[in-house]
Length: 319
Image (tube, rainbow, N blue to C red):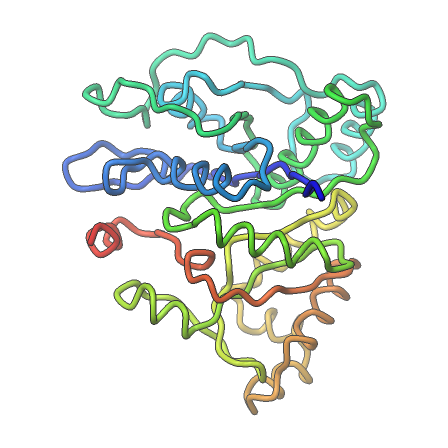
């Protein structure tokens, strides 16, 4: 039986860059680890999984030139619509989708800008699978929305499927250098069998400590065990754009304890403090918050939840 293949949307937005010893500041996805760029490891895992047809990188406009320099064979596309999650943009997007011309080839001739790889690394890297690059200057949810729309547009162009027809894509963060094809295949295989709008990966603490004891992660306790958040999701197009504004609001609460507590509610907080919070409680709260059916997959593959956020983590990862 032939297994379904998915588009992989890789979120590489934001203006931040990482500065490694002896190197210029560069997009984190393009920073090297053991002689290969972080993005290459994700692309290779995607190919090895056998479940990904192509990758779509959504990055900040200031970083597009850097991706083009490293991967000149990538397809550059641009958007007629700027994402900011407002009803006005939503209406404009819907009109563009209805007309079938939201995305088109990128014609701009980019000149060298900050963030390009060092001159000594001018040799372009090969692509393990087709790669598309587009831009979004907005929030992470808006980047996900952009990647989803491009995936729908590409399917429409190839098969004639209506742009508005439901589609599911795999979403990944940009800094997963340890991801393997086996881990990605395992997540997709279990997530696609779940009836949900969005399926998110949770990774067991035991696997992280076993496989990457020197890399620090933040863990939380549920009745099912101790976990860290993964960096993979299987998302349906039906979650956009309704979730964009709400996700941004919840993300903004993360540093305001009072607002965050109010959003979570007393019942969730009490259960958490008493170590009685369950996975079902978390899934139910997420579903209610975003008005969708959200579920989680528990993974024992530490590579799904082990990323590189800071430059000081590189020396440990190089071992």
